[in-house]
Image (cartoon, rainbow, N blue to C red):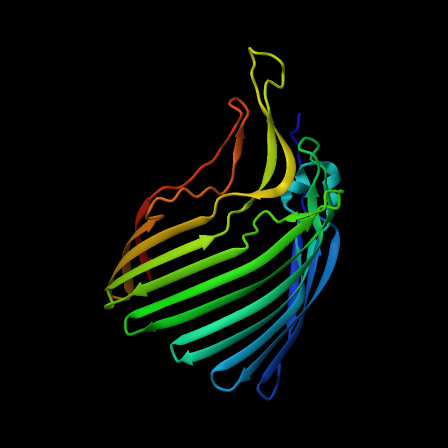
Length: 307
């Protein structure tokens, strides 16, 4: 009794314009985007701004600011006829960055950013399908990286990100961690190309576990031993965390040129050491337990043709 039908013909279109002018070593690019969304019946103007400052030959500073909109998912709009009044979610965001070349092939970079989120779509209870734009939130973080371009047969990079992201549905429960919030993410990658035919690459990635709800399990909810079912009662939104994620991937490419075409054969091995990475949980009401899917060692063999 929760099926829903959404049948409509609507259009969405956007136009964007900006202009870049230069003040010595500084480039400034103001711009604006216009969106017309007939699904939500909104006309939206989004001012944008970007600036770059080339400080000497090896260092560049950058800054951006602007307003961005995200259309509601059609799945949310279709869940109930009243949801066709859902508005676009809004993000007011800004960032500052720096890049510096230590050598021509070795670069360090850093960026800090902040987002203020408004009109976030909040789903109601699990059966009604009603949703509203009562949510808001904030996110902020810093990204750091060291990158070596291909030279002397080698390339590589090390990147680290720290972030905080929270949401508040404004329903009296207070703020909570956003669904995809991982405070710490580390990526280390390297590749070796001894000639124009062979390429060997490795990437290791680590991330804090994703947030998950705290809960209690209720047994025999129908009070019928011949129809035994369990229920999962949520007691806190994203108050717990799943185990940390980490995995090592390896890849080998072999390339041959045939006329103007490159034929690449590759072997890609995902999660080489078979780490059990839990990304989400699904409740089994027949057994009263959470089950999860994980990816063990997963090899892929493929052929790629490049023109």
